Image (cartoon, rainbow, N blue to C red; front, side, top):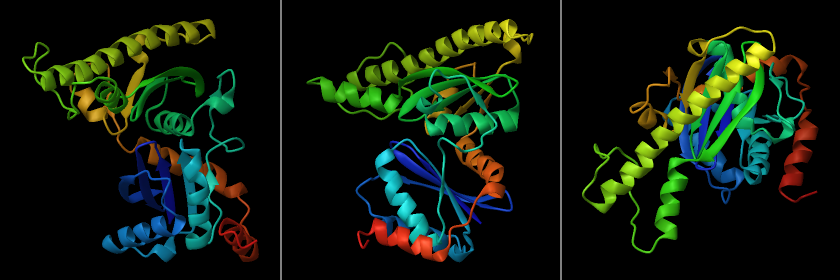
Length: 288
């Protein structure tokens, strides 16, 4: 079995794959104060609850946008699963041609989402990840990652309103049903949720225009109607309710991408010896 970690700023999503198919998945809070042993105990309990044999996990793959937690998860992988985790980053085969000015600056989650979306839905496409930040990525039919946009997510915007104003309260992120609202809570919900829907519609419209221009300039004739828009992330369903530009909501897109990237890299993967892993664990625990 393969254990995949998708580590975001707010949540860690875990997926278990067997023979290329996802068996189950879980979501837990991202907490860089937790030790490898604490995460190990949580994962043991999750496997036990699903009646899964944790000893069947033979490999681990990690995508993270939280560098401070990577050390902990690498330690976890070595100590509890006796393997060095594959970490999404430079040197990993993805099948994408990254056109960013500096490819190393592209977040691991954005690359993984692009790989999964292109493999599952083809191109050209736009991938929207509605998490702590809201990211937009444009990918051509030929699997060229040509760039995108990063905006504050709904939760960041909501927290900023609460923290930076004297009288505005914390609110639940849900549709109030009206844009013209008669109380403060609904007014904030209207601005946050409907404002974000407007942001998504506008950026997708502009990205489609620029993606068509890019493809035309590079010898591929496409129309805006050819471009699929795939949404993922914890808030994708909420935003999808109020926009017309999203074609598919795929909540587990990142986990699928991790499994696809694992298959691309496992043949050239060198298995660490038990002694190397033992030394790595001792190093992480400060015993070397």
